[in-house]
Amino acid sequence: MDKRFVAAIRVHEHGGIDKLRIDQVQIRELRGTDVAVRVKYTSINHLDLWVRRGLPAVTFPLPIILGSDGSGIVEEVGSEVTDINKGDRVLIAPGTSCGKCEMCLSGRDNLCREYKILGEQCDGVDAELIIIPRTGIIKLPDSISLEEAAASALVFMTAYQMLVEKARVQPGEKVLVLGASSGVGSAAIQIAKFYGASVIAVAGSDSKLEKAKELGADELINYKTDNIHKEVRRLTNKKGVEVVFEHVGELTWRESILSASAGGRIVTCGATTGYNGVTDLRYLFSRQLTIYGSTMGSKSTLFKMLNLMTQKKFKAVIDRIFSYREVALAHEIMESGDHFGKILLRFGD
Image (cartoon, rainbow, N blue to C red):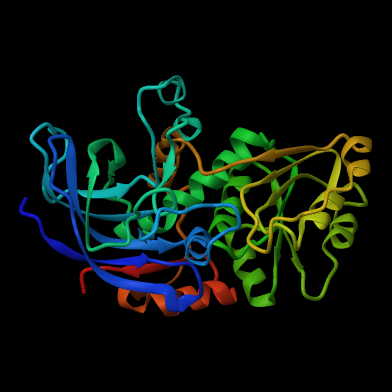
């Protein structure tokens, strides 16, 4: 493949939406184990906002191409690639690892010391064409569209690891899903229900809560009009919930602690409203709570999610799709919270 330039969404310095740039970047040469993917859809995650804004004491490799998950069509394969062909529809795995350490070989690649999330520690997928190792792509079954693939990879991996692999949700338990209107929240509702739990969904508007109910939520809490933990106590006859699905952070952390039942589990993967959540240790030890931290999920988890989506057990929730040229508007909507599910960017138009 001749060297060429393609359009990509990049951040050169941290700050507001005005720091988003669409650059012409030169793609690297195709190696024997590489695949060239013509990107069709990518999705916006809160991670993109954090990378663009910057985080205290965190160094990002600027300039950086944003985007952690996407889908596309194979344009060319390296000389050593034999199981992927030009024209194949593929999903781009959101993370990369060394592939040879103990963690990688035992199916826990997201614990690899060299693990990197695309668009955070290395260039991401928000580009017209990317070159990626064969190990970083998954051929899509015909039953999953390119749009669904781009909208589901990161959030379903994350929610599955949180609820199933960390909190070990059980049939009959109650799960409190904070930020139910987000991509990861909409995935959490479906996963909790699939494993036999009942769901209390929390969001900031009645319209969002109705959509959460359509996904399977059993009880609804509007955090703008009701106190979360008091409503949880009312709905559970003062017991609380066995599992709290937390990713909102500082704004809801105290409510999460107070909403958990004795022996309850709280699992968190993010802090969209701030990371200085204060934990009253009296509640932690007196009620024997367990707190789990979780980031993304392993590639084996991704295969599980794709298999379940093929069986139509889960569905991607897409709010709207923008041209990649409208990335500034997409970030504005993500920041405002005026969406339910995933916001996608479309390339190739």
